[in-house]
Figure 1 (cartoon, chains in turn blue, green):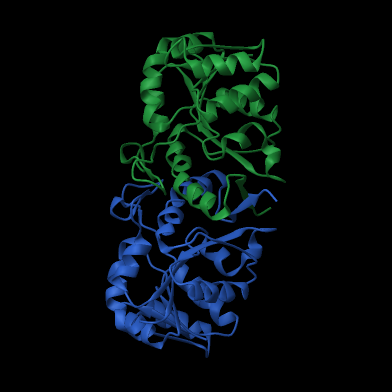
Figure 2 (figure 1 turned 180 degrees about the vertical axis):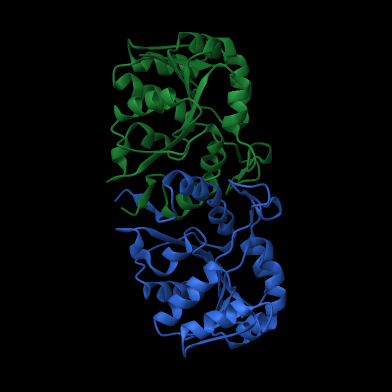
Amino acid sequence: MRIGVLGTGMVGATLASGLVGIGHEVMMGARSATSDKAAGWAQAAGAKAGHGDFAAAAAFAELAIVAVLGTATLEVARLAGAQNLAGKVVIDTTNPLDFSQGMPATLIPDFANTTSLGEALQAALPGARLVKALNTMSHRLMVEPARVPGVHDVFLCGDDEAAKAAVIELLRSFGWTSFVDLGPLSAARATEGLMPFWLRLMGRFGGPDFNYHMVRAE
Amino acid sequence: MRIGVLGTGMVGATLASGLVGIGHEVMMGARSATSDKAAGWAQAAGAKAGHGDFAAAAAFAELAIVAVLGTATLEVARLAGAQNLAGKVVIDTTNPLDFSQGMPATLIPDFANTTSLGEALQAALPGARLVKALNTMSHRLMVEPARVPGVHDVFLCGDDEAAKAAVIELLRSFGWTSFVDLGPLSAARATEGLMPFWLRLMGRFGGPDFNYHMVRAE
């Protein structure tokens, strides 16, 4: 599949490399078509990897992944262009975190509790089939679930059932087996709201290689 | 041990009955010393059960548990009396949830994100050795972890290490085996922040018999 990964940071690079590794054609999107980081990644990642600006990566994509800081998400959506993502499955991995006051980070109030960054991103990309997913774990775990032993979960939500099914199928190819579908995209309020907890745990555990598993009665 | 359970609702009654069931003397605290609900509970629960107003239950207690709605928590602390809980371990099971707009409930902004109800309760009870715990699960699971099979976790936090150890010891007697200590009481921001997620899951799963387990790399 042709996948556009919007973002050149650790999350974007890890996802992009992981997707190339399982056979997809990936274009990394950056602010500039001549981004050194995106060009460097594409060169290292081989023949199936390319790069371009956000709009080019969005236009290239059959499926797109937004993998930028929460504070940049809506600007990146504008730069990518709603028309370039209309009708496409878009995975939103972002979180509305404010790191400006140090750790532990807090949620940006404008995108928390009674609303979410996921919903704001969907509003900025009205034709996109948005699925909130992967935003509750370390970037390395996203493409390598076996870093944490046993069964643990991907939480996802979105308003398009077929889009969620497509995301689950893509993630199965990384080895994910356990998915918890929280329902409509408004559930992004809930999964984004896990991040303060996750960040506290990372501090207590001394690293990011952990994940949630919801255990249920039979 | 003499335990004061502040609250006559489902959470309070379940905890109080569970504690009597494992041999503790329990006084249920209510707004009124003649509360019908508290009197009815005490009569049904047998010789080790009593009831009184919040202040009486707090004064009786060697260890107290606050088990009321988040919207009532600080008033109950005032009625219980800080002097009656000074030096005592107090388990705070409350969550700052606003159900007034229907489901899913939201967090009360005054006690979320950059602060928490747990911290506000500690400020209202300055001499108490507060431990935030049990606020991330169904009331029945609190005293009967085997309702959900396998290993799943109690999350707790607080500023008094010995108090946390005492709470862990008490909970082990209900069969709990897995504890995740998130550190200082400020981590109540994180665990209270799980509730919107938990409520969404309850809706999706069709019931409250589930719990979190944090899975870690070796």
